[in-house]
Length: 115
Length: 108
Figure 1 (cartoon, rainbow over the protein chains, first blue to last red):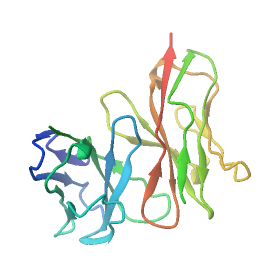
Figure 2: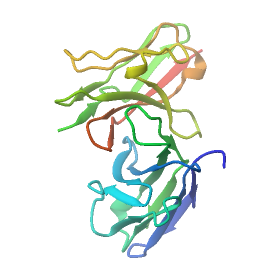
Figure 3: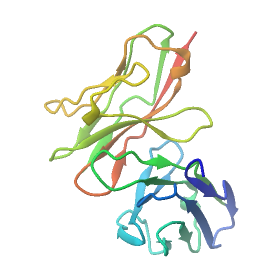
Figure 4: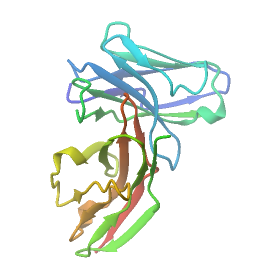
């Protein structure tokens, strides 16, 4: 594909519902990042994968958030029992490798609204 | 703690005027610093990084370790520069810390 692809672009969930957000990184990219961007704020780091290994999940706000990348390509961010404070744009980014100053390419994001 | 501060939420300048978007950071080691830009209805993209010491679209940014700043500058703003700009820092780990962003509006 031409770039990082995220789906769905928009998701409305009722409070308490589970959601799954998908990220298709650029083919061959080793590193994959998830960020959460609340309205009026910059992106905040959630988690990082190197291939299928989740090397850093320190940014996940609670145990309701779970991310996986089982085959080292597509990744899914799952949020269980969604709350209103989970409403945000969820961004995925990938980079060819994890070296200093390697450029990360971002997807368009998934806008999650919890009602 | 790692932190990036962009003091201005909105900066409005006239076309042809100089522009400076401020960024201050807090980090005890040697950080990697970046500027990202998001044009209307487009995805976030890298504008420039301090290690490259490059000029992209006429923009430059110099790392000042003494003042812990990485301000973005352009001598003559263009209307197409109107966008959201984010300063970002990466320390020794994997995560990149972003500032809250500054919206630049260039008036005709």
